[in-house]
Length: 93
Image (cartoon, rainbow, N blue to C red; front, top):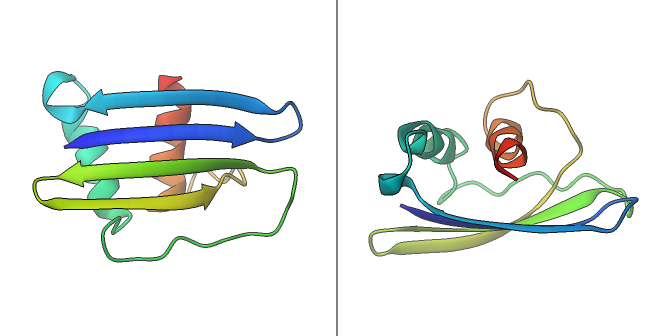
């Protein structure tokens, strides 16, 4: 599984990009579990309101499936699904 995540925005105007192949990483199975736990290819992520919140553009390629989503990072890292995936991506950068 290939993941490309680009962070932009927030108060400081952050910008960062992470590109990885889960087959080449020790935390690859964890990342794949997080992608599946968020139902990345099926669910629509929540879109909280806030112009000053960081935004992630995440693209996942898994075999023949490819999808990009825009996520607003409102900081709730304790929940399962999308927040858990974002929390892991934050630690990579």
